[in-house]
Length: 495
Image 1: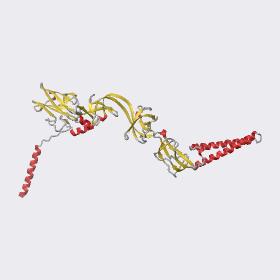
Image 2: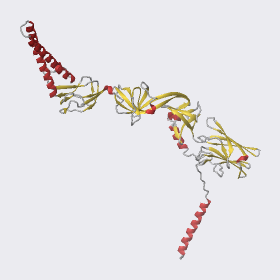
Image 3: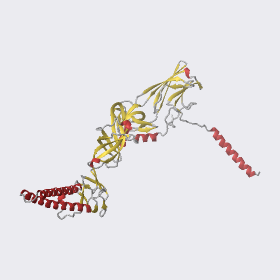
């Protein structure tokens, strides 16, 4: 091996030895989420014990304070030492008093467990408080104090105003128990007309367009119909025959009374008159069935002309005819709907039928358009669907501005009960924080996040079961600004 190779190998060995020495001299510190040491920020430094907890000592006595919450609700676990050696937890008396934001206090008592003292109370979030510890060992008392802060930010009045944050007070309110059911806006079937010609023919003129408003009796379209011409001709012929039959009857009646003609001739004339009257009546009835007025079937108007008229006031919502098209007598050529009143159709599941009744008032909401109104249940089906296991129902909705459009999805809210609860918060003040629903409680110019246990809720407020006291002030409108500021201040959760 030449001299140059030896120099290279020697250099590599020296570098390896130096790196190994650096690695061995580094002190590795790991922090898990199993035990909280009592601080909200990584930047806060304090002595730590073997369990990564906050180490408090006086003379030869020491306590290591942790909050353990791995797979269990968070509780204090405190380890005792004398001259850096573990003490049996049975030999130590301990209680801790927590002074929380806003003046609340909690006293925690402890019981010995295997190797540590376990707090008997769950430590609510946030783990932000002033801690007073009173420990006893060998007839001596050891007091300790420390503070830890998390989930807290400061915002002055000017900043609150510029952010649009409003302050509300936790207190009693009425909570509605609401049954929400999906529904759709549909045509009022009592104000809907399918227009059919009732006679076959060819379209020669269309007077109304799709979406156009129409009045009752207004001409929608004009058809030419051979069948109609035959009916009108038949009526005209029947009328002429009626005139002749009436004249013949009058003549035969006069001759018979004067004993000039035989009675049989008179009876035949009377029969022919009756038959002629029946023919005219039949022809008139046939024209009436088509919506035609017999008196306008002559006088220069085409016998084949048929005017298709609107049966009600409304809007053309369907149109199925064009000029030159041949249509059948039963063809649906237009649909006219009166949209000043619509239905809110919905289905009531079988297990909710006792809560929903005809005549009951409900709230109808269309979130897509920001619409809301109060309506009355007008119909409840008598049968439960075999497949859906629900009964159909609908409400009448006044729609003078025609903003409630058929086909629109809506929410039907049925108020089942109204109860006054002792403590509530506004829904707009709730924010998600560490898998909790929480509010930001205000004391002076400081805000602290406060996780809540909630009960019933309605469209505006939620019942508070735990986490807040009556009379406490909290951020309501635009509280998300505080959540954003808190996220900037502390993005970790390491006690």
